[in-house]
Amino acid sequence: MYKITSLNNQGLGICYVNNKITFVYNTLIGDVVDIEIIRTTSKYNIAKVKNYIKRSDSYKASFCKYSSTCGGCNFLNMSYEDTLVYKREKVEHVLKKFANIDEYVAIVSSDNRYNYRNKITLQVQNKEIGYYTYNTNEIVAIDNCLIAKDSINQIIPILKEFNVNNGKIIIRCNYIDELLIHIITDDRVKVPTNLPSNIKGIVVNSKTLYGDNFLIDKIGDKYFKLSYDSFFQVNNYVSSIIFDLIDKHILKDENILDLYCGVGTLGLSTYIKDKKLYGIEIVENAINNAIYNAKHNSVVNYDYKCGKVEDQISRYINENIGVVIVDPPRKGLDKKALNSILAINPKQVIYVSCDPITLARDLNTLKDRYKIEYICALDMFPNTYHVETFVVLKRK
Image (tube, rainbow, N blue to C red; front, side):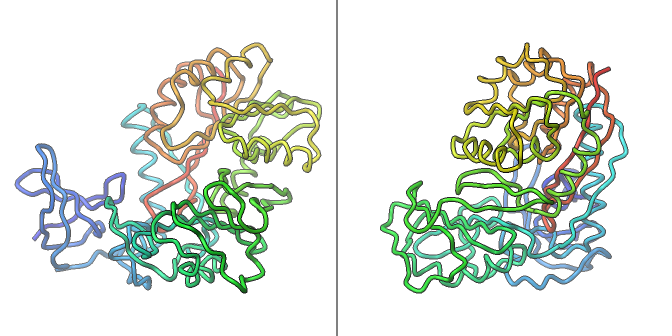
């Protein structure tokens, strides 16, 4: 038997078998378990639990019937308070390890641990609809997801009527529970009769099959148009906290460059009318959304460009940018983009990150010229090991 002594950055339990580090699925700190090693390398083992001899003090029985097999929510059986401690300490540890940044990181909780996601992506294989198990391409068929909005769950049981044999079904909803369905498949999709009235659009392989290809969502007092393929944060409550943090900390009288801007949310959350707002985003529909959102949120002095950030950013080196906002994908900032930010030399950088490791890597480059003025972690993704981090950097 083995005792789980810690969790890694992906939320897997850690024990040692013959002095070799072993990562164990579905375990918590303090669990005592019998394990079966299912994969071994020269540096580590991967194992699963054969038997729980003693459960952790953090253990809390999950009431999701898929939690032992689905790869989506690895912390459903951990007390919420302990998940927050894990995420806070994880960010601190990663920043120290990869950037030698020794900062206390506050953690902001979500208002709801369940039914918070405004978007889910379901996999379809041989007409089975569900999620992949952790680190595999095997489907766990579901009819309900504990972390998805109720309006999304209400539509899952009728998805088989769309005649999708293989592919993906992406469902997103807005603040008034309207739904937008995006299907990616080679199959001939059939739109069921008597669709629920809150389904506002069905898009198949980028072609609108029914209704509209966008929704209007709301964060705080601002409204945003978002197309089927545009990025939008999955937790509206935590997004509103990020809006408040930006508005509190941003330098108010500076031109703003919003990188990886999506539909424009972060830049528009705090825009000052007599200053210029620039934005770069690779998804064309998202840029069109950002232009629409700027107009409909009373912003007049804006300039959005469609393209890769690393290809477009150099045009702003001489534009007197005082604040750069970045919210990159999980891989973090492209090296060329990072060097261009240093060339722009803004007074302030606001970095929103969904991956502490790539955040730490980028901060390691920025820290010679910038100091951390404020940092916090936010529980954008309750019941998972993922964490959002918000950092304000001030030029030295």
